[in-house]
Length: 248
Image 1 (cartoon, rainbow, N blue to C red):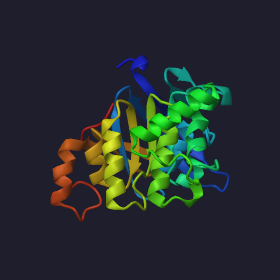
Image 2 (cartoon, helix red, strand yellow):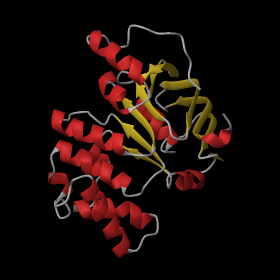
Image 3 (cartoon, helix red, strand yellow):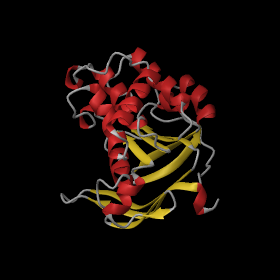
Image 4 (cartoon, rainbow, N blue to C red):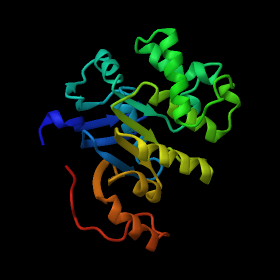
């Protein structure tokens, strides 16, 4: 696979925080265009740090980051990459900051150069596509947790990214909203990288699953194979059968 087929390339990444925590040690990971990839790991395993690293929200200690075929060296490089790669945060309150839902969803297109009228049209269509028509004038901070999660997803999809990252999309959600988000993700023709602690959700929305453990990422298996196996051993934290495969 040539580098032109990769949308994310992480090579020999080290990441330590000022408080002394060592998050990644010589981490390597590649995500090809068109992939639908799940990332499983317990809280504190580094999933959120990985996404923040990819988005340029935290600086690496050392190592190489390539996004969309370009080397990430400066904040300007990351700003360009964010036009094609975007992240739905675990906490929707980190994503929503405008007075109304329409303003929140229109903000991204405006930031990408759309006129006010164009941004409003994009926002309304995005809300319609997600079955959120009627939310336009609602106050974002008064929404329920599930509604906030759906609107946060809308703010990202309004920018039509080529690559969508989602950090723990099902945290705190009821079953109905969980199914809605699952159906939305399964309808998207985008490269996906979804981090979750739920094997079942990942098995139903992705094709390959990786696990994060001790600052490294390991291929866990094909989602279609893991899905029925997971149900047989539902009490387990990880699938009970591994074939020793390694991902790209």
